[in-house]
Figure 1: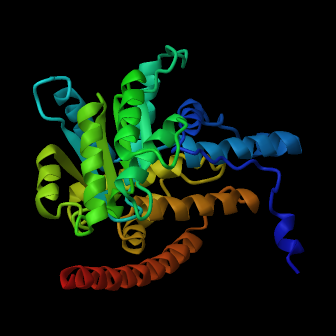
Figure 2 (figure 1 turned 60 degrees about the vertical axis):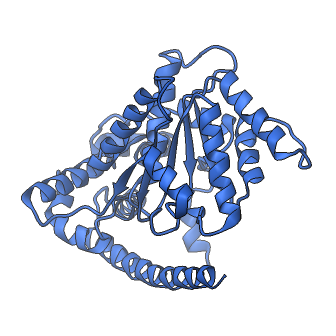
Length: 361
């Protein structure tokens, strides 16, 4: 029944899963290195032993999915904003600055903050990758579902591996967390999934207050990342006004190709993505020849595009063609677009119902 499918499935290939929300997993991500495999001809590749080919293919998979990142304009804008905020925060007299990365799903928000955090930590740790004991320059903390002030601080403690009791009072947890952050000299605090905080709800207001207290008590610069944060209630009321006053917002929007400049940027993104695949018989810039079709079907989302193209690369490696099937990529993107539109419509209706209930209260 499914035997023919599993014949082509390499069940021995290890899966890379970095638990960013724990310091050990974050350190694994920071230290992970998957250099680009050496170029070779199809003849040289076929002359390799089965083990050597498997290792080469594993190297290609890890390079294109983990190590390689397209240097998009949005990513560079986010990096510049974070650098500016960190520079602002060196002054002890100024109110703490921060950055919010906002946009639709699949536009590279989390990728941007992860890559900046990894680059910063590698720079701080130096060429050897080592540093003084207990030095943790970057922390990654996702906002938990149904967050409260106490669970938010608990997530920070979880990242650092601190032991605490569930019955410990909030003030004690806060003091413990900020003390650890100061001792670890944490310089950047990434708060992901910030769209889970809708300030129309009282518990979420308390979470916002908790994060503000953390920011004021620890030396690190806060970076929030989330989906359409303005639409999800993060800027609601007086607390939202305080956040807007302290944070620079960087929007990750869809790529536009209406102007020559926009089309050139989109073409460069596609060309860089194609080069990361390391396919042995892929014609140079072939993907660029269907740039407009790729834009239309992906909605200008680099995340959707990369997923479809990388899936096509795996197919090309698995069926030994070593060349992308452009028609298949376009078909997969079209299917993904239809699903995304359905999900977006459903989410819009749910958001409207939540707003209606909040106003009714």
